[in-house]
Length: 104
Image (cartoon, rainbow, N blue to C red):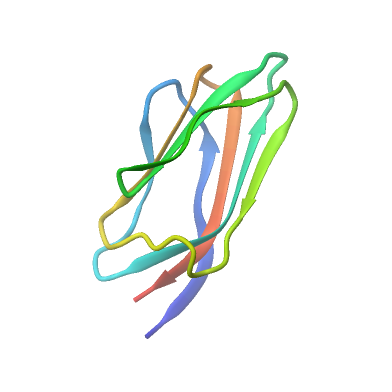
């Protein structure tokens, strides 16, 4: 069993559910932290879907605020070829960074 600590995803969210990470074949992923930052002057709602399950649904992040979600390695397990999707109510307003471990 090989464990690789890495960045799973980073970028700026759009206003549609977009895949920001796909677990490689023959691998599982264990997110260890998610940071979400609203860069805009307005409140923005964000949604996060992991393995087709809503983890965050239309959660409001105030202007220039952030949300950090720490996980232990075993809290969320994402199987091979499953995805992480995210969206914001305003395209371009929110950045996301997800770190974790891939195990193959």
